[in-house]
Every structure is written in C-alpha cells, then in structure tokens.
Amino acid sequence: MADEPRFLAAGGRGADELGYTKTAALGMKGEPEALSESDQTELLETMRRRDLEDRIRRREATAAEIKREIEHVDARGRYLRRQLRRLQRPV
Image (cartoon, rainbow, N blue to C red; front, side):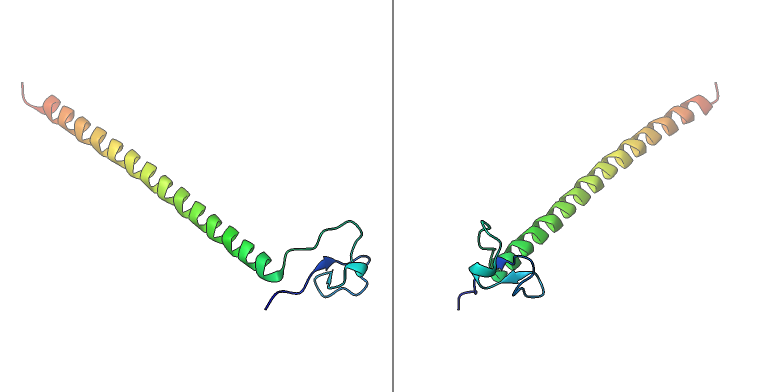
C-alpha cells in the first residue's frame, strides 16, 4: 500500500493536525510534495540510530582516554614510590 501524497497546506485550509493536505490544489504554491509518513519515519529512525552510535563512540573514546590517563598516573606513582624508597634507605 502506497502512502497518500502530502503537501504543506496553504493557510491551514484542508490541513490535518500536522499542517499537511492530500490535495495539491490546497497546498502551498511552488512547494514540492512532502516526504511520505513512512519515509519520514524511516529517516527519523536512521537519524536517531546514527545519533546513538555517535554518542556511544564518543563515550568509548572518552573512556579510553581516561584509562590512558589513569595508567600514566599509576606508572608515575610507581616510579615516585621507588624513588622515595631509594631515598629512605640508610646511608
């Protein structure tokens, strides 16, 4: 089943609750047909999925950066503890 055509309604005449009409004559002059509801839904879902994937990638990158920083601080701490032990040895 194909979606019905959708045109942005001119001045609200014959418009549905979203401001669209099925009749080109009631649509705004020079405006192309709007995306079908199914195409619009698919596009929205694709955008949501990409946004989620981007957020996941950014979180993973941030977590990896934090892990590297912690490893660096841990290594520096081990080095400093060794140096301190050496300095505290009796002469």
